[in-house]
Image (cartoon, rainbow, N blue to C red):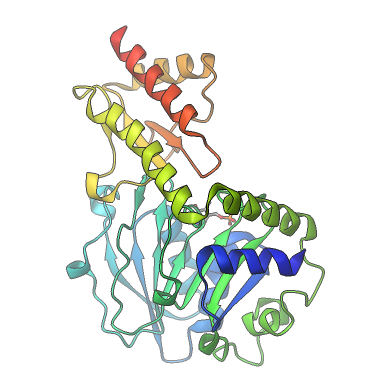
Length: 312
Ligand SMILES: *Cc1c(COP(=O)(O)O)cnc(C)c1O
C-alpha cells in the first residue's frame, strides 16, 4: 500500500527516476524549517519570493537556520499578483530559491515558474499539487501537506532531487534529515499509515478521472465559471487577484461594502455554501475549489451570486 501510493504519485506527476518521493509528518509547516536545515549550508544564502502569508512563514523559519534574502515581494500591493521574472533578484548561486506555487489567502498562483539561473527551485505546492500538470525536473524540491488536494491531513509529500540529498549533514536530528527518510523509503519510524492509505485512494481516483491533465481541464472550467461571474457582474463582485495571477484553486472577491459581504455570506450559508468567508487577514469572500469540488458546485455558486446581485 505504501509502495503503491508512491508509485501512483510518480506516474501521475511524471516524477523522474532521479527524484525520491518521501512521506513525512509535521505538515508543510515543518518543511518551512526542514528545507533550510537540510539545504542551506554555512556561508550560503537562500532566496525567498514573497507572495503571501505562507511564503512569509517559510521565510521566518529559514531565517532561524541561516542567511536569507528576498528575491521579490508583492506585499505593497496586498499580494494581488505574482512577480514577473524581470523583478526577481536571482543570481543563480543561491543555495535555493523558494516559491509558494498557490497562495490560498490572496487567491494568486504562479502561471509560469521562474527561471532561477541554475539555483535549485524549491516550491511549497500544498494548495495546488495535482491540480495541473507541471515539469518536476524544473524543481530541486517540492513539498505539500496532503490535506488540500492529496488526501487527509497527517502526511506530507516531499519530492527531492537525488543530488540535494547529499546536502543533509551527518549531525542533523535523524527525523529531520531528508537523507534518513530517503534511505529508509519513508519507513524509518512508524509512518502515518491511514493517511497514506487514503492518499493512495485519492491518487487512484485521479487516475480514474483520466489523470492530472483531465483534472486540470476540470479545474480550469470550474475557475472560469466563478471568475466569469465576478467579471460579468458590472463591478458588483470584484476579484482581489490581478487577472494574470489568478488562482484556479481559491477564487477571492469582494462586494461593494462590508455590510453586503456579511449579508452575502449569511445568505450563502443559508443556501448551503459553507466556508465562503475570506481569510480574516484580508476579509471579503473566498471560494476554495480544490480537486474534490465538482463543476456542479461551482455552477450552483455562480447561480447564487447572480441571483444575490439581482436582488440588490
Ligand atoms: C495550507 C497550506 C500550508 C499549511 O500546511 P500545514 O500542512 O497545515 O502545515 C502551507 N502552505 C501552503 C501553501 C498552504 O496552502
